[in-house]
Image: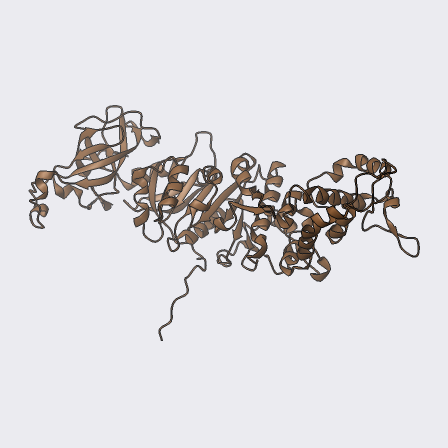
Length: 573
């Protein structure tokens, strides 16, 4: 490969600054597109890649501004600027992207620590050279069997982008862009590339159901119909708080006491707590609720400390049907006036303070949306399958993609956010046990702004964040759990999550706040590169990332199976 070819000459460097260099183009003819040996070159036009001569190193750059000297602007006409002996001398600003060893030009160095000299010659960069650079992005010398995938082609010179998937997903990935920019197609293409070029698994949170036919190598779990439920016993105590949002000062203590009591009932196989149970007419102990009022504390405390590890685990392993009654049972005076070793009688003030919590529990029990998702009353949804088991079965299957279809999940009661957060916590817990280390898994979240940066407030407006995926973004990578989020509103994604994204595929963005969010999170996305975002065409995207030494403007290839993301049309009368 010869990076410098006189037939591709464009101009000379006439000014060098730390941010960019200026190139003097001897003739306006040199900025036009031309063909050489069957290959098209964009010359010195805006957005084109160029190479600059050096002594030891060559420089790779991109043209981002083009103009004429002030004295020549007044003389420009359609005729004389296109003459063979044109007297116009355009000046281009060139952004320096990287440098390469002139004796080994197939690899580049990310940091530009040197600069070209004034008078250095500038040439148009070939497709072959750009293709080699792109395929080496993020690939380390010790890497073996690196999966490469054809993501698309550069818009500047049509060079093929065979991207290392380790570079793309290894530090998490974000697909951003306004509606109609091609975001859904890009997600479908990424899923297709992973499924066809790797043995790894993808789990897709499909917010709208538009990805239902993107692959034949895909399993689907329909959520919200009762076919699959996320068993409430697998929720963490914090996630139960999200559902019930108890007030921290008065209701949380009683709720925790009730949960502990119900957990103790579940593990009391020898009826060691029988003095706290109610007996029926036949003398059988009804192991539904504990009644503490006026009872001695000793047996209760002995049993508690004997099983404290099981009781204080973070999961909701108790019978939710009896929670409301148990909260009422916990509303007693701490001690009896006549006997300090016993509980006192009912405390009506505590009962009054917990009325709203008891009401919310009963509301959760009776709400169909909650039941079809969390299985609080499993007798009403016979045959319901467990989402956790569905995910585990998929991970052990031959399929590459699992689609979690949320299109039937209600937007009410914040069910969607709570459920996705619970699934995220489950996946993070599995990854911490090392289950994805040998076979990394990628979690795709479409319409991520619906699920991330959410919180649940109690009746006193004390907010609890739903932060499972922020935790995955911070620590999942070392466990082999990677994240790919897609959203049209990056400003609504938590900065902590967005800043952990190592790769950005950014389609058209117009809103200044969205562009600012990308600029703050992606160090490589400098101001010159972001200037292209509002004018990107459909399917075009700016690719920036930690493992990409320079921003790339790519036309993403159309996926073989397209998502159903068409906008309904108005009908003619």
